[in-house]
Amino acid sequence: MRIGKIFTTLTMVAMLLVGGITPASAQLNKLVQKAKGNAQRITNVVEKAQDAKEAKQAAEKEAAYQADLSSGKVYYVNAATGSNRNDGTTPQTAIKDLQKAINIADEGSEIRVAEGNYLGTLDQGYIEVTKYMSIIGGYNSDFTDRNPIKYITWIRPDERHLGTSGSHASMDINVTGKAKGVVLIDGFSFDKGQYNRYCAYDPTNPVAAAPEGCETGRIVCVDESPSGVPMIGGAPLSVPLMRRNVQGHVTIRNCTFVNGYDFAISMGCKGGHFNIYNNVFVANRMTACEVRGMMADQSLCSMEFHHNTVLFTWCRTKVMDGQGVAFRYHTGISTKVYNNILGCSNMAALERVFLDSNAQKEAARFTAATNNLFFMNFNTMHNGNADIMLPSGGGKWLFVDASRFEDVEQLNEYEGNMEMPKEHIEKFTAAIDAAYLKGYLGINIQQAQSYDRNSGANQLNRLFGQNQQGTEIVRVSMFGNRYPYMKAFDLYGVIDGYGAQMPQ
Figure 1 (cartoon, one colour):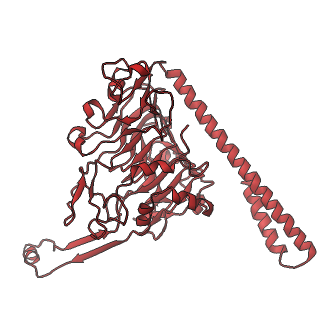
Figure 2 (cartoon, rainbow, N blue to C red):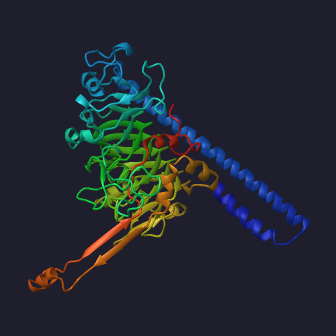
Figure 3 (cartoon, one colour):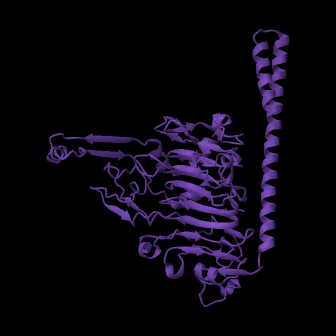
């Protein structure tokens, strides 16, 4: 804050003194510019030191939790070479099925998972975690190397799993009983691009809403039956990629969440701390991440959402009338959101609209958004940047640009947020699928209504005092289209210090 005041003072001095062209004023102007440069360098050093300190503290805290509660037992899972008759205690005796390993492992164990697609018991299409444990993907076949981007550990169901996955998320985590219990999910890739239903790709058909070069047309929602265009994929089912409730310390890191139909992460905190970082979220519908506080005493719940890259979060429907946010602040939990890249959100990057009915609890709730980069979060209803969405008190939402976060009373901490600087935009956009980004930037919505007062139905409705009937057609140029899943990995490590970094 002091450095900011120095900048303001120096700028005012420069404006006052540089008006006259004299040797003295020119020299003073040089000194002012030099001082401003020195102050900026100081600011950069301070910010980097603070980021490093926070990262170190978070790592130490997490290591302490895991050391206290680890059983010391390690199990190995390998879809290619394992067998469910093995004991899983060595790489050579790896288990084939991840769900089998979870079922037999002791609480507090570590499960190491080699590359492959893991779909649960008899490939039903989902994984259930009901114990405190660490599940770490991204290993090669002999477990001598780990790289979640190179050795991809999938949970990637397709339309064959519609009848067996039921109402389950791709990964259900439901663990309670220990206030200091640990759940770690590290290095997994979730994708439902083959499971969801989409309009077939046809850029000439407006019903398909398929921009040139995209993999598919628009996503098909529950109770929809678009006419005049073939369908591909499975069916619309309202389940997230990851969900359920946990008590204890939860870490979700180095994971990729792509093409989720109904949220990527939607979970509840029954006391404890969630640490969600270094993940990539792309083309998820509704909300990329939300964690609800579920305790009467909200001081028992906290979370951090940081160093994640979130792109193309789609609204609930093609009318773009709700949801469509990268991160949602919930009641009952104090939340810090920092050093993320939040871009191309269909409604808003951040949503802070939920208010606790208890005024005292609402006042005590801690909400922070610091040092985030925002990219193209343009709301068509607001006709401007929508980096955070707030309640307005007037019946409509209030959309606020990152440059005005200082004025957002709901934010206890707000420093360092900004639109993505020009020097980063070219590199960042190069990492995004070009056809998808082009289609998104050109989105348009067309609505047509028709009403025939003299139609037979309306004449009969008037006779019985019932409402008149009409039709409304909404056409969009793009909505929830499938993102090419392998391109999501290109978004790791694009901008140093912001968004998902290369997994360690």
